[in-house]
Length: 581
Image (cartoon, rainbow, N blue to C red; front, top):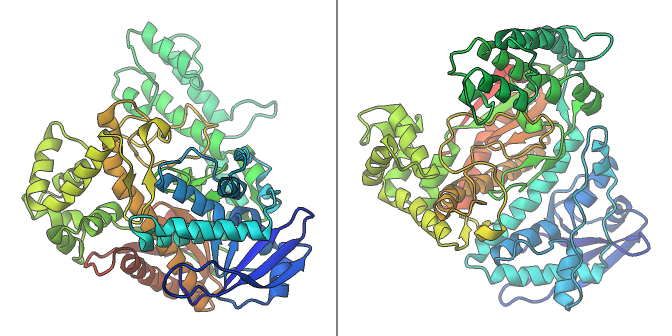
């Protein structure tokens, strides 16, 4: 953290009062414990901060941003910077090879004082209709002196890491991410309920007065049954598998890529049903009633919700909004949506972290990355170059993938060696870290992904599990497998995808700072892996688009130092989200 930034702590006592305390500046040289030099006391966190009259640039140190910041936002208080004790504890425990230990501030204090460590509280439900509970958390209080002691202990643990500056940067970025997540929830994604209802009627048909599936789904279900010559419920995978088996076709699942090539009259209506059923169950009339209030959809974003550091959302399906439903995401009158997608983010990150001179030079050119790579060993074939890069990152080492990988290795040996080393570490059960220090735990403690490793042939299909909670919907290999080679394929990807996720946090933090520094009314309202949406007045749209590019450059400098690698964005200024792609 920057030494010149004022530091204040904010904590709640057992009686429910809130204490803000200014900490002494951290001097250069050997670590000197901070001390509280000025304290205030108030009945709630907002009043404690107002009473403190700390400078705007203050970094607030508190137990949990998710537990405190929503209450400040509802009181009209925005924070410039923070240090999230619990986010830091999770990162440090993973770095120390102890990811399964409780990560709450109370647990950190117990470990520090050699007292019984309490388990982490159960995850709070974000069931439809309960999303506003984010604004009314009830965390276990941790006294001010205990909070300061835990913070000081974490500072010492940061110093003990292999790259303290990077680890401190990661913690600062993760803390900023929780501020941004709370602000995005508070602002909400603009959502036109009338447009959404019209879309549902257009796609699904009218709803029957007596309940049941809407007209179009019922018609498709009848077509499926007619094709099989018996009554089949297409929403029940077991029923569909049994029907295909009776027709002499044995399948292992009803996923789209397994049935779309079959020669059977039920395939077409079944695929159409599955697509519409997913919309009906995940973003239908019930979803609209539960999740959209006063023209806004407010999902709860959870930074670092996966092993790689990518975000998830707790309910609402925010990271799986079908393109057709994006037509309901419409800017307010006189406002615009600035939608920005990072171009080939992960391969560019691989170039930056591997320090491969040739790869960095290619990734610094003002053109499509795969096109540029294709001129080096792939005879100008962009698709082959793309498959080679994805094969290196995801571990495809058979067939054409092996040939493409060999060509890539000849041209960019350090880049391929970087992911090869990560794969070998994973196979051997060692800890593997991103560029900034986010750590993939030992294999016995990992259970984050669903599928096997490799490059999937199709995006995830959740139509058979409409109640599935939001997860990282990237095509991520599995680390939970007992197969060492599968774990190696995961860690091969982890060092790239995780480093990209860390870079994205710095991008968001830089963009948030730029918007606030320019006095804009613009608001960050959505983030998904490599895409960010800003809702802003029309007259600010051009400045926001420029700020996104500048934030990307700044994030690259902060994360990777002096690198020629560029991180361009494809940016669209639209009134409707669906028009951006």
